[in-house]
Image (spheres, rainbow, N blue to C red):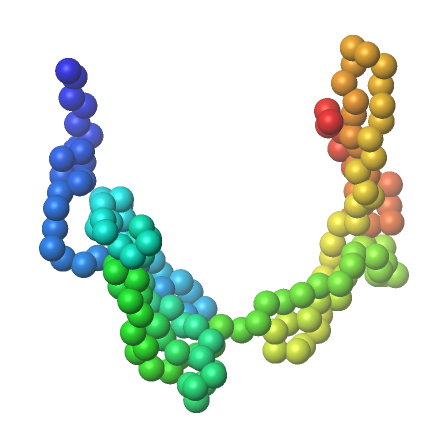
Length: 164
C-alpha cells in the first residue's frame, strides 16, 4: 500500500479523536466569519436524537420576546440550543421589480429595487426573452434560443443557443 503525505496534512492527523468542542461561529455585523476544522466537521459524534448531528454555531434569529426582535442562539453538537441574549436582526432582503424600463438618456434597461429598509433605487439590468424551443429534423437535436439586451441598442444584444 502506498501512502501519500502532503506537507502539513496526513489522514491520521485529520481524523484524530478529541474531547474539545470546535465551533462554527457567525457574527452579524455586515460580515460573516466562519471557523471550522474540517476533521472536526467530518467526525461529528454518533448517537444524536433521530440520527441528526448539529454543528456548534451561534446565529442571530428572530425572537418576538427580545427587545431587538432577535436573539443570539448557540446550537451545540447534541442539537440543544441556548439563548445568549439580544442581537441586531439582519436586514430584510432587497427586492427588485421587472427589467422593462428604458433610461431615456443611456437607453439602458433598468429596474426599480426596494431595500429592506424601504428606500428605493434604480439599477441597470438585462432584459431577456423567454427561452424558445426550435424543433429540428432527426438526426439534429432541437435547439433552445434566448435573446437578451442590456439596452435598446443592437450592439447590447446577444443570442444564446443551446441543445435542448
